[in-house]
Length: 169
Length: 66
Image (tube, rainbow over all chains, first blue to last red; front, side):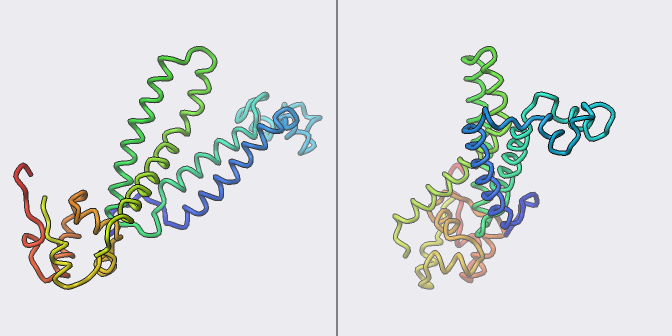
């Protein structure tokens, strides 16, 4: 009784957790070695032996300049991509045991997470001003996905826990 | 919506887990249906009725206000 057409197969969930784990390690490493780890466009040019080209003319440099910008941190872009892919894999792949009840839980969690996320954004709009609001916007890119995952797993856990207290007669 | 799943289960002497396995859903689903926390789809209601050899109306009944 699997009605939802848009969910990924269950094997994606494990992959999603692996990607998430790697991303967390990358984030930790980034914050620890932030000053040393300058993973900018110039480093990429050096890596590919293109420093002499000065970013003009060759297609690769034009691509990099237009994709990441000269001062952007490539690692953060990479982390962002991984976080979104991991979130989608974890949140939107089927559970090993999936049925219409779990689908209902997933659907309700999605609505709940939308409310919670919107509430958080509303509070931030009121209380966060200036440059720090950029952080709010950045976190907001991923927050709805991860608030949904937390809501869904919390509801699954609470459901399983309430069942444990009931006699299986 | 009220239901008589627990009574029907007792009549054939099977656990929630066994019923879940027979009709192809999780035990959480059976548990939630019994407690009235979840209203099953027509397909699941029909499967349950077929398993117990009863009609859907014998297993599920409307309450006042439904």
